[in-house]
Length: 475
Image 1 (cartoon, rainbow, N blue to C red):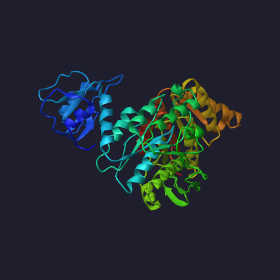
Image 2: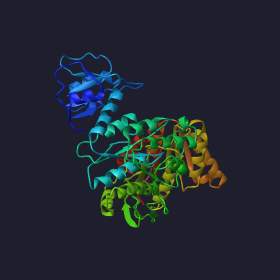
Image 3: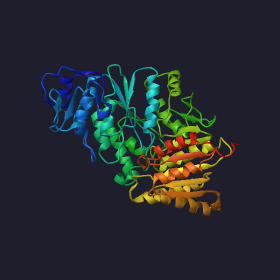
Image 4: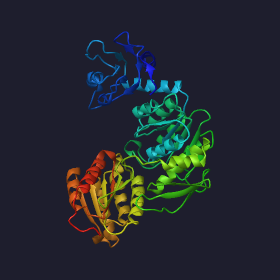
């Protein structure tokens, strides 16, 4: 965030200071975590079902906070500057919108059932090859996250890339109408978060809401193969720009992947060749969307290539690492039926490039799927049964149905004895089992909804394997 006089922040959030005389002090940044406050920053205490940030205001001041917002009285030492507001999250949003209005940058908003964060990273690096770009350091896509992303901008910023997510009706409409993005990119739409949205049609309707906030003259970028493409087009006054397929406005031509476990990809967009060292064909499609935006903004293919060379997938999103001869593929950040299928395809591709060892899938529950959760887990299990798999470990809840469907489909295919299955209700015994089971040459995929915690499990297993002295010879 750009440095601002406290007086301007107070005016922007409609607050009133309890302590007089510090309004001309310069706030150098904001923090919503008292443990990470830096001297000179404004602390914004937020509240949830299990916590109240007001309890940590004193700690924020002890770390050097210049001032703190608060929506209720808080006992403090004399001289501490407390700015009273009706609602601290609403105040944070107001400050972010003040930033949006005062600074001269354009916004590209990205939404979709999968691929938002990865596409954001592609676009951040590509645009950053030519100008100052701001974007969220993590997967920030709700009211809080979008506001924190806007506050990443400063006077040098020319483009800001923001994710917008939804798990219920009205959320994208709210975010988009407040931010007013000049460009909107939609990765794809699939059956995710349907616990609150009902079905695919409900997901499409919720995603369409993002178009309501498009700035006048703004441009939308769509994959013509995604479900609901016609519905999105019908809500637009201006024809969208398309990407991700050979017949799109930005034609995509896929080349066979080549390389080792990092799965390098080469491809063409508008006849120009690009490449990156990242796994997953779906990531090529995500990259083509970012390239489409960049080309419309006037970036050259050479600049785009420089940006792509810097791209790295965020943690838990098809992170590929070899530790003590074991290939770890960590895609544990999130999961729905569509992303499960993409992960299986990518894992199969990676496994086909090495010999020996076993193919192992460690799969957790896909959450927020509502009444059809069991059906979706069984569908994914049957899909996995057609892949080259030696061991399936499922963890928690409806993943049990995934494992049962996998075993049943394997038996139907006459391959009953070609793969073992194990189910655990808790992570700890699953981790203990895997720490004893893994061997040199094994290839392991981790995939689940983030709240299952498979990412931590994968991290701990990598550490365990790195410290293991194998009792069997490497082959």
